Length: 473
Image 1 (cartoon, rainbow, N blue to C red):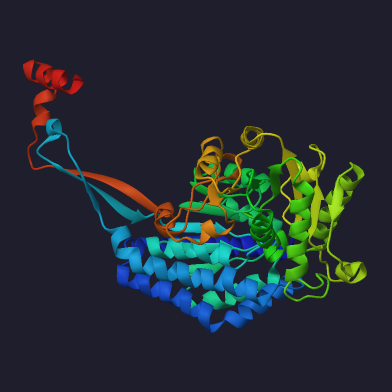
Image 2 (image 1 turned 180 degrees about the vertical axis):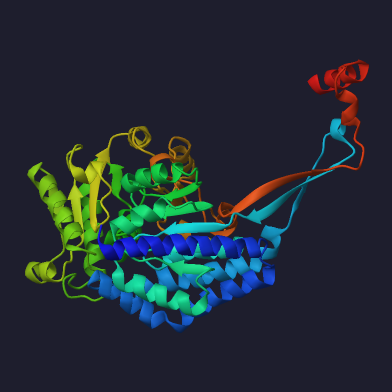
């Protein structure tokens, strides 16, 4: 560990202490202040939209401004506005019923802020995946420390500057640094830790948080399948799957990771997707609308996966492109891999790039069994003109979320909880689910000065027997 990293770690420990003190001084932040916090986030997005998009593009080598605007900036503005609109309803105490045997009395649930939360955000959507959890934390009345990915340093520094202008550092602060700083961050005694990233690192984060019994939300990933059912129009499936896979060059946790389609239709679907790609991007190497791969390491990994599948007998489809220019720009052209070997990395690892394996199935049940036999994915997509078939896929699989005849967009519905299950994550956020993630539902039972339960105390007599018999019924 370098001297600079050691100083940064000491600084973030001091910041945590300061935030905890500030939270104790304002244990229940008033709703009008929380709404003002959310307005500051939205205003920050509107005022600095160009700078945010430029920083992200700089980190990637090239990211289409349109992708950054719609998937990062506008997303956060909508999220903040939705939280502000519904905050009064979400935060209102809930009355619950009291059994006759416990009367007289009243019971309620208070939704209270957990305290100081840590947010670890990834590189693929470096602004949205830091700010959307922050929106939920601020709505709940919490204070927050954010550790962005070191793979997107320009965005991390800009976010640090913008949030420092909008909030006092004992309210919201950004911690930058490499893996050593990130590891130390996950070991801090937060009141809640929110992590978005890979399943592999998620396990380490969970273990680090467990040392202090810090509750965690893990937003992970996995291999999200797209299942095309018999009879679904090939062109329609290709347009939807192609768009979802190529958005941000496939560097999306809920991008279709592989396709299962009726046997004999693999080539037609693959060629249709390549046609969609050629229409969207005239030449992936030179088109600024097509996003680059974030780092040399990720670029090399994707190329290795393609070549492994090719060596295993898979057919590789790509649109015409300038290969030398693509390499220079660190861009992987849209790639379809037909029937890759089951044990190749494309079929065993989350791809996180514009590479799409397509495999054929004989019966729909075989497709759902394949999905069910593997780790539960973060998302599942089913394309079907028959609602019964679509429901059959849902009934026989389990995933974090589902899109029927569409992909990606389920995470944009504000009131749908977004999160995984099993290896794809635990916990959820967006909308009220995010508010609840950073809130403690505190149970309160009230009675007067005297309650008949005192009649049930030892020595046990007839009153106890009467009440016990009633409850046993």
